[in-house]
Every structure is written in C-alpha cells, then in structure tokens.
Image (cartoon, rainbow, N blue to C red):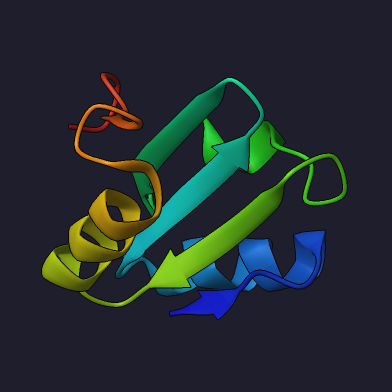
Length: 78
C-alpha cells in the first residue's frame, strides 16, 4: 500500500492498469480497480487515495481501518 502523491502519479497507475485505488473521501470510502473510468476525473488534492497491488491487501486494510460496513466497492468497476 502506498499513498497516491499527485494526479500525475494516479495517471501513471491508471496507465499501468494493474491494482486498486482506495478513495478515502469523508462520508464515502470506496475501492476502485485502477482502470475504473471514475478515477480519471478524480482530484488527488481533495481526498487521500491509496494504491494497492493486491485485492486482498486492499480489502484487509479497509476492513481494519473502517470496518466491513464502513466502505464499499465501486459499482462501475466491480
């Protein structure tokens, strides 16, 4: 897991096309596949985003941090 540092960083992760991004928005915590169309227009300044190379790592991190009901998987890229 690592924090996405900038929009350029996010763009490069999208280009590579492998992994998951957790969007840590206040009130709406969501896990996306890195190739989700929603990520292309997201700001990296407004909310923290975290990159995971592995789905199990991402879900365990989210469960530990927010509980199983405290986050969701994106419906677009599920």
